Length: 333
Image 1 (cartoon, rainbow, N blue to C red):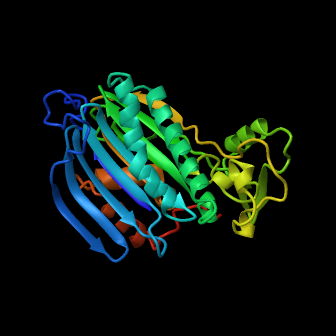
Image 2 (image 1 turned 90 degrees about the vertical axis):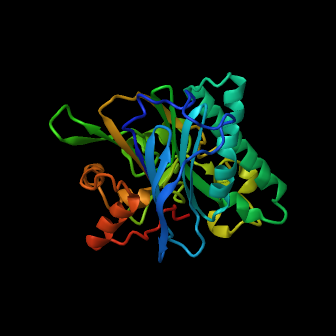
């Protein structure tokens, strides 16, 4: 389970790259942390500073090997935050953490630093192409690399605009002040790609009209080809190119018939949100959190802990409710 919490209190008025002390090349410049620690499977940082406000991060390790990654980067382009919820192994999430931001920087350089939805989309697709190339290169020695994937949730704050790009079932929720009432509303900004959502199943059926088994209900859960819940990811190459859906990968991943088009997509859903002075904070989290908390409850917890805007507080509330924070954050493949 991954959580990143960002304060937006000053981001409307102090966009990065305008004499804010950020690094010229887009490198990390996140200031200092007031507290960092580890408690069992929980790792956290409370509170860090970036040019547009404050942030904190927390990770709960659900498996023997940590499959998830997260990052925050600041520079003249703005602020970049990523939550990468891996499944099947850690390799895809680690690759994305090492390469997605670099690809974003390279694409942005081509457009003289102008950030658009297309800029972010190109960074995602180039990262997907790079990982696919890696899978091809190691196929003879590490074939199961083809069965590793990751959900990707990215936010970019640039020139008073927040871009959200998503693959999979992580989620970003905005805490927004409602006038002068003291109420903070919870607004979900990202669209999720999970076969348990009817609109996602309909999308898959429209994309694969000749495949009646594109989504299968198994043990009460809808899955793409009866294998995986998410319909978009980086990695999971075994469901995107049939040449990798064969021996010597694990038999449980092999489909009975070849396919002639990708079953999953690496094309993210992207929205842009003009930042308003009433936009107070953002919660980026993998599905492990949202399985236990509603959007409204998560925002309420943050709002009731002013200054200590820390994901570890949210995880504590999960545990108080008798729901372990160390739930599986990946897909059951």
